[in-house]
Image (cartoon, rainbow, N blue to C red; front, side, top):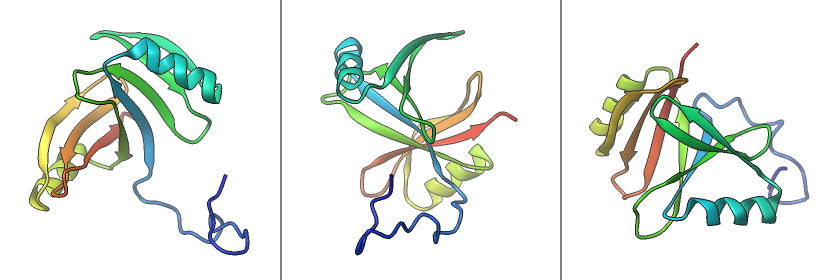
Length: 133
């Protein structure tokens, strides 16, 4: 699906390939079952519990372009956290810090790769992701 401006022409074919695409959306919520129930009924997304060494994770099938997941998190309100693919997690996290971001989660290894989370100078959080190859 393309949200092209103007006469309905898709800008997707004209755009250059992204160097650092969004590869994962993670919903952080205080009520995981309720959130999963809402999105599965509204959009037909499939939710699957995945066991990992550190516990479990609720994978959310969003389509074939971006992966998703849901985690319980003690926040005042739920939020979607995008993860952007980077070539080198430590370097990208340090570059964000030099650009004025604060690091909410230092680079951490998981089963499929490394992640970190930074808060931009404007206050928005974004995840950085380096996949294992």
